[in-house]
Each structure stands twice: as C-alpha cells, then as structure tokens.
Image 1 (spheres, rainbow, N blue to C red):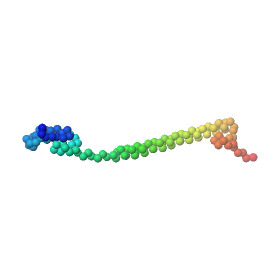
Image 2 (cartoon, one colour; image 1 turned 90 degrees about the horizontal axis):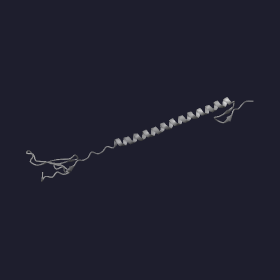
Image 3 (cartoon, rainbow, N blue to C red; image 1 turned 135 degrees about the horizontal axis):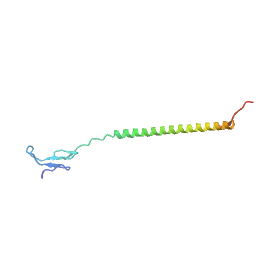
Image 4 (cartoon, one colour; image 1 turned 180 degrees about the horizontal axis):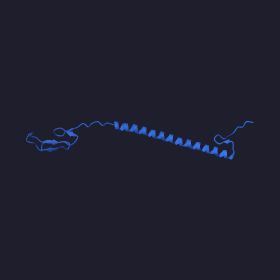
Length: 109
C-alpha cells in the first residue's frame, strides 16, 4: 500500500494472493481502481417543491376567499338584524317612519 495511492480518502487494502496488487476501498461518491473518479450525482427532481408551492398558494387563496365570504355573511346578518330591531322598535312607538330608508310612510287621502 505504500506505493499504491488511493485518492479521495479511499482506504488501501493489502494485496490478495489472487490479484497481486492492493485494492482501494472507496468512500461514497467515488469509484475507480484508485478511487480517482467522482460518481455523477443524480439530478435533483424539483417537482415536489414546485407542486408544494403551487398547491400551497392555491390553498392560501382559498382560505382568504372562504374567510371573506364568512365575514361578509356575518356582517350582512348583523345589518339585517339591526334593521329588523329598528323596525320593531319604531312600530312599538307608533312611528310610521321606515328606519331602514329613513322615509315617512305615504297615506292616501
């Protein structure tokens, strides 16, 4: 092993009787008789990140829309309840004013 170099932190194994020369045990990512070749790394697949971003964005938009619809319906219900309460109060007082439109009732003479 003294005269046989293993590159890229490969570990030299003494020669066997069958081969007659030392063998290099390569670290992950390297190969070759003396670990001199760097293995080609597989290309990364970014599909998961892309789909996650797309569906995450769509989910956020859907939440905003649903929240807006929910809040709008609550505001509308409160407005209707308030108008009904004003009409009920005005009818108890004998007033002929429409509280919602602030107009007076029309009577035929």
